[in-house]
Amino acid sequence: MYHTARIALVGDRSDTVRSHVRIPGLLKALRVRDGLDLDAYWVPTEDAGQGMAGFDAVWVLPGSPYRSEAGALAAIRSAREGGIPFLGTCGGFQHALLEFARNVCGLTRAGHAENAPATAPEEAVVVPLACSLAGHEGAVEIAPGSRAARLLGAGRIQARYHCTYGPSPRHLDVLREHGLSFTGTDESGDVRIAELPAHPFFLATLFQPELDGDGTRAHPLITGLAAAAVEHAARAR
Image (cartoon, rainbow, N blue to C red; front, side):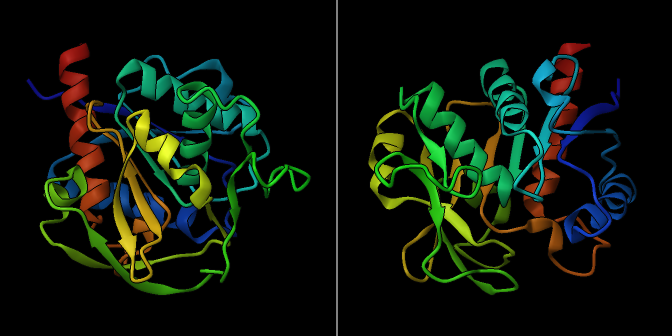
C-alpha cells in the first residue's frame, strides 16, 4: 500500500530566498517524475520547538539567521533522536552541527558566530568562512561508501552555495569521535557534507542542492530524502 509522506519544511519562508521559491517545483517534480508524493508543511522556526512528531521527514532549509535558533535546533534534535529522515541545507547544515555539538558531544556552550557574534572562538562551532561562498559553485569530493555516494552515484559533483559561514576546523575531531561522519569536501579539503551512518537518513550539506539545475528535477539528495520519508510513512502507518 502506498503512503503519502508528511514533510516539515523548517524555515522562515520568504520569497526573497531563492531556495524557498524552488520548493513547490521540486515537490511537483518528485511527484511526477519519481512517484514520491509528499504532503509538505512549512514550519516557521518559532513553531518548530514543539517537535516533529507526526512528520515522516524534516528538511531544515536555508535562510539563516533564523528567527528562532532554539526552534531550528529542536526540530533537528527531534529528527535525530526520533529516527525521522532529515536533510539540512546551508543554514540547516550549520545548525545540524551546532545541535550535535551541544546535545551529543556535550559542548553546551557551542555557538554559531552569525547568531551570536560575541561567541568565543574556542566555543564557536560555526564560524565565518575565510572566503564567502555566496553565489559560488565548486567541486565536492564524495567519500566512497557513504550515503551521499550511494545517492549521488559519483565521486565528484558540482555544488552551488550561498553562504558565508561554515564549520570550525577546531571542532571537527570531537564531532567525528561522537559519530558524525564528514563525507564531502571541497577542493581545499573543507567539509561540505555531514551524515550520521547509524541514523535511517540524516544528511546535511553546506551547499544548496535545491538550486541544482533548472528546478524541474530534484537533486538526488532531495530524492533520497523523499524516498526515505515514504518508507518512514509506510512503517509508521
